[in-house]
Length: 344
Image 1: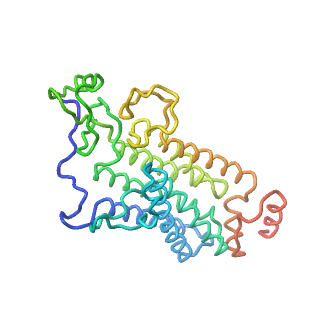
Image 2: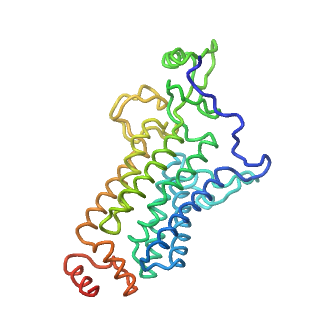
């Protein structure tokens, strides 16, 4: 019995063959829809001083910032050829060679940066509490993110490293390896795969897209929605937990996801085994892992600062509702005392 799975042949990137509408784009729309639904569910359940128009507008600009940031980081940091740095006017150009190709290549971490910048600008312009908005949105983001990773799986992209686990999947577009390599022969023997006499072979990979959909999506959402959101003391706690939780989970899942072949490891302190397709050491780090570490550090610092300087979540909501001002402005014990006096 073969100890691996062939990628389902009936899964195609296009929803309707011949039309430039892909499952990945649809999954993005579903993700945005879920995040918006969960956001509105929270503000309708509890009066916190935000109008539905405020939330909708901030959400809209957050999406714009997300798309811009995701595209820019993908075409700069994740493009070692520097093609887009030399041709920056093509970063948002969806056509290639006279054909519509869409915007292929989006970076999650770039999307986070873009969304944060855009929503902070909007909240400051409208004198709204960004931390309050970020908590409301952050509690629902992971469930929407789940569908983005399902879109990656349908596209047969962002596959993991070679594995001998029984759910290892052969992705049709994955890199092939020479059958003469000793490690290739060992893997094939362990999973019962017959090798040709010469040439290259496609080996089963971790379905890392599904790992991410489950753990960075569903599991993280359950934790934020039913634990952190219900127990938070200050606004900013949920978005901090999201940054730390996502960073922590993805950091370890990256050990099962193959780095981009043209980038390899950004930091390497262990044996690479001559290929990035096999796990060889916990001390080899991809670009994604470095960015995840920065997310963890940023989330921890944000939570530490908010706990020391901010009003409680209930007090901040009261200020927002009563005075229509940005409760997050000002810091330190004196500012907190003044705001608490106004509440009384």
